[in-house]
Length: 112
Length: 114
Image 1 (cartoon, helix red, strand yellow):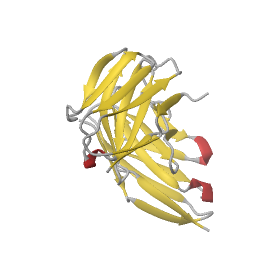
Image 2 (cartoon, chains in turn red, green):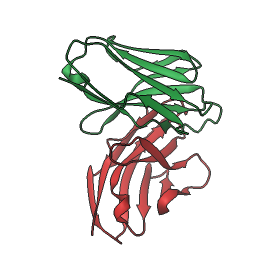
Image 3 (cartoon, chains in turn yellow, orange):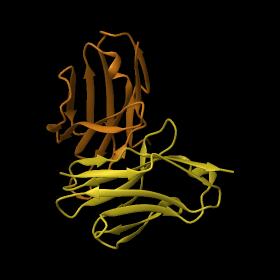
């Protein structure tokens, strides 16, 4: 069975600081991994995805994530936070691309 | 053009009523989903249809009945609404042919049961 754990339901950073959102997964087969972002009163949109190609994945808005099989992790980072990055972030895993299981989400707050 | 569109965006109703939410996608995808997001922002899958056939049904009360008239549409009908049904319901779609599992979401339908 597949599962996702996002460590830290709330993360607060200062504008310009490093953003690190943590995600660990459990999967019985090589997984597909995703990060989605949800802005207030909107649906989720894909930030980036890992599909067994390069382990370092670059996404939109300057975000990237690294797949580490040995640590079963797929942490999301951005070198310098912008105010516009404030949102809810979801990590998701899909074993057979048919069903995605989402983590509980991390609320990112960016302080001026 | 909106890729995945849901109507209505907001729905306020009394307990015991029946309501429907409609979803349409113009992406040419063959698989569609309903997700429920509760007040804590937790996302749970409810149903999935592939080419009008139900493939995922996640222990949802049978008061919830999805219907897919064609692969571009997936509607959700809810009977005898309860307070606990208050949530944001998201429709999503993907292409099974691409096999990467990336989901495209609608903007959500916020249901409030009074």
